[in-house]
Length: 611
Image (tube, rainbow, N blue to C red; front, side):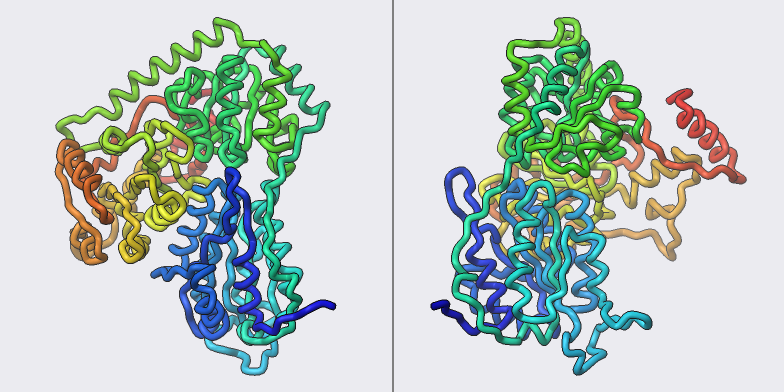
């Protein structure tokens, strides 16, 4: 005889979340580490009451901004290598739509998060309710339909029994590496509070395991044959290497065969920076070692990467070369006309290593790549060394790296910093580099740092953020202080959007509306970032040069509280070594001679006639 328990939909949902588990390194742990919540009229009565009753088994975290808390949840999942996740609940209207940007970020980066926004009344009895969007042509539309294109799976819960199917399907989507990404369950306000007799079995604890699909035999054989016949093969390691836990397998394969490895933003840290086959970052923000190797390579083996334009140099770096894609997702495995090897990165690399046996690259190819690394190391020293001039981003990165221990994590997102970090940050171990650059989302940095710290509380977390991103979203600095999670935030103030200002001028435009001094204003902005950070509860100070920065970083290391260090930086200087062309369209017609010249160069580059 089956037994049931009468619960509201919200009570059943939270109870179900609390009994979903995964096994990590032999230890069974809850898959959902907690729920971020900002309550409003659309979720406080239903979800709020349910979460209050689950506080001991499903922690609830209060944030200050819905987008910020979603970024923290996403960063947590990324730092956990997609093996654990968090949920986010909001009211309807702006509370829900504030999370859409974060949903897009998670979707682009293939990261799991469960969005639980409140929705309109399923009964439509009090319609239109406060904050309800009314579509003049479709009564079934609500603001939450904005989540559809940025969710891996979307459902609107209009009956309490629907979660019996919706929740397992949501979990299956997030746990599968081929479909992993954000899931949205829009929760109608009245349904949140409605009761249903749920089967007891629905709440039985379950352990989910991430599948590791193996490659097709012939596809793998084709890859083995291609490598054996190649004179200059190159591996491009993406985020899939880390999510699969394949870094040791890759390290062993690279060391045994001598095949050099370049890393994408998400894949950085797949090899320690001083591994003999590590060439560093590749692409538009790549090292000269990796990009020169890509130019000379006759075979590219991409592992766990989307091959977006920053990695491929807008499809120019690997043009005309034989390309194989090892990817668990069929959608990504055939991009750019690649030969598909579909499967889990660790499983494929393990079988590949065994199949190659004692095969190795030629001494010439090994030597050429080693020479490239030596040249790049010299360029690194020059870019990160302190000087008497206004510090560059690279010099600040060098100072932070010197003060960080080998177990530290650096966190960043949009602007010029990710490019400099991709080139210059030397990662010692997996997880030490956490930069969101798939969506290049300003405002991710501090919230992301909080998520990283929640995922790995024993590691020191350095958040590097520009003044523009800090002003866009700094509220979760207060949340970090409130939760007692220590971050070291290095705020680089170049007075505006320095990265885009440089791009604007590189495409022939005049400085306009990017740096604060080039924008419309009644008086120049003069923001005391240290005072602002202190007002949010952090320790904060401003330093004047690299030497003072290193002293401040030492003080921050000795503190047990979140510490913000502000330093003025040069908005113009970037690392000249490395890099690659990036396709940014220049106007065909302009009154500015500089734009016309930039267009001429652009058209020549499109035709392959020059850099």
